[in-house]
Length: 279
Image 1 (tube, rainbow, N blue to C red):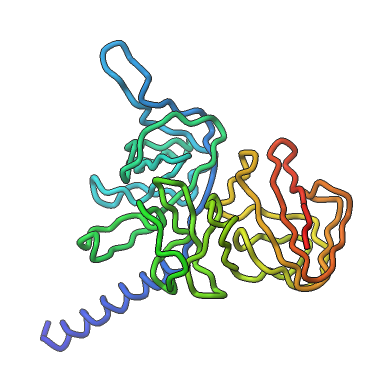
Image 2 (spheres, rainbow, N blue to C red; image 1 turned 90 degrees about the vertical axis):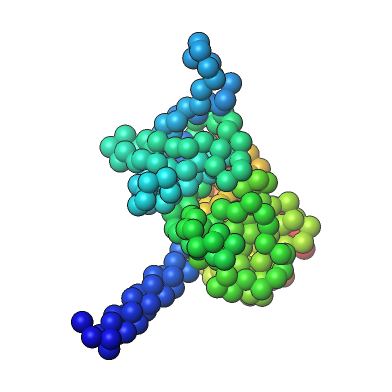
C-alpha cells in the first residue's frame, strides 16, 4: 500500500470516528427498575463481609458486555450508587456488577427501585483518553453555562448527589433537571412541548403550546415514577390548557387560561398525575 492509500485510509477512519461521536450526541440515558431487592455491605456470610454482585432488573435492553476486560461499557445507577456492569444475562435480566463505582458507596436497594442506565462511551482530556460511560459524573456542570454539544449523553447526573441537569434548547445552557432541588428555586426552561392527547415532559419546567386536551402523560427519563414526590413538573400554558379525567390524570376535567402555571405531581400508589394550578 502506498502513502496516498494510507493517507486516504486514515482520513476514512477519522471520518468514521467523527461520525460515531456525532451519533453519540443524539443519545439519552435509559431507565428500568430492579426486579428484586439488592443487599448492602452489612450482609455477613459467616467469614467476611460480602456484597451482592448480581443485580436483577425488569429489563436489560441497551446494557452491553464489556468490550475490553476491566472496562465496563454500561453503568447502572440506583438511588445514589453506581455499578459497573461486567456481564449481562439477557435470559434472566440479571447483571454481574462492580459495586460502588465512580466514588459512590454500596448500599441496599429495595425491589422496584428506579434504575438509570448509561451505555455510551466518551473520552475527554480529563480522562486521559480512557473511555468512560457518559451521563454519570461526580460533579454538577456550571449552572447556566453553555452546554451545546459538550456531553454526548443526557441528562447529566451528579452521581454523588443524584441531581440531574438538562441542556436547554431554549437557552443553550445547563438548567436544573429532575431530582434537582434548584429546579424549584431557579428553574430554566427546556424544550417547549406541543399539547396532544399524550405528552412527554421535556424537563421539570417548560412551556406547553396548543390547546389539545391532554389525557396521558408519559414520565420522561430521569423522572422517577416509583416513589412519592420524586416526579413532578411545571408547565406554563401558552394557550388555553385542558386535560381530561381519563388516561393517567387523577382529577376532574380541567381548563385554565393562557399564562397559567400548572404543576403535575405523580402518585405511584394510584399511577396517576395530580395537577395543581397557579397563576
